[in-house]
Image 1 (cartoon, rainbow, N blue to C red):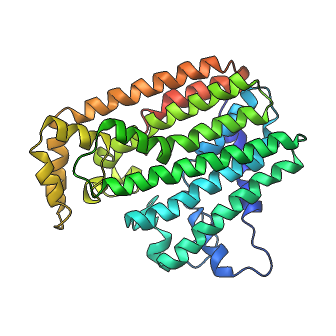
Image 2 (spheres, helix red, strand yellow):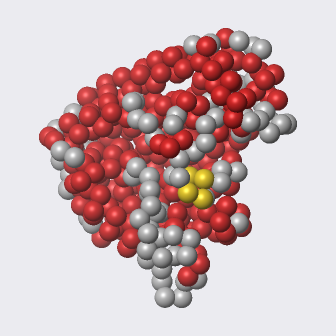
Image 3 (cartoon, rainbow, N blue to C red):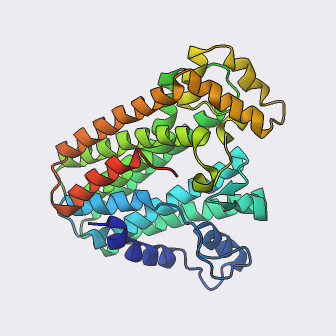
Length: 339
């Protein structure tokens, strides 16, 4: 089964419905949202742009169906997860000063920081409104309230991770355990929530819901480590971001932390990037030096470890059918992705 072909049309329709502007809403505000979601250009004319992978809602719907649920009933939650993810991206772009995402200008780069914050805040509110749409598809109020509570938990974890990510830029020493704490919030929390909510909305036994969360959470750790690799050695034509973006921003990603530990002399070269405007040759030379420490191979190995833990948790969730098989396949494919 191709989960994207199966779910994306209904998911996109749900997203458009949830981000449909009310009559009195400012056209600018919702135009920015539609731009960020890949539906219009900067003049707010219909345009199909790279809208991202929609992975988190796909995992939610797969998790629901794998546990015997009707995935259509989980669409409000799937939309909520995607809107929440995009709220975090808009604010992340402002905080990291990223002028491009998915191969085109970010919201703040076009309309300024203040309006981009407004757009992000709106997506945050719309995410909660979308989740409450479960009241129309799920008969148990307790399940809906539980879903809302677990969404709140994940949002807090996400912002904690983002806070640590930014704080690390000013720190000269960050250990791997602290790095893991950061990515547990920044990335793993939302993917864990996606799989957890899917199982919850299928009325799966609590032990299966817990296993589904562990699957998504560990996969999220692996996913972020793969992102760390792409941030240094990815193809800009595929990633939509310049080579070495993490180096320029002073990010403490796993290959950078491991590289410094193996070759402490790299620390001064990396810190110098924050007070200069390095050219492409300087960035390329640092990427080569980091790879020479074994940091690329180390990060690849760690990503495989967490992927294995994710697949073990997936087996414990005792899902069935083509959706369960698709979850396994998708989890295995993520490790070799190029964007």
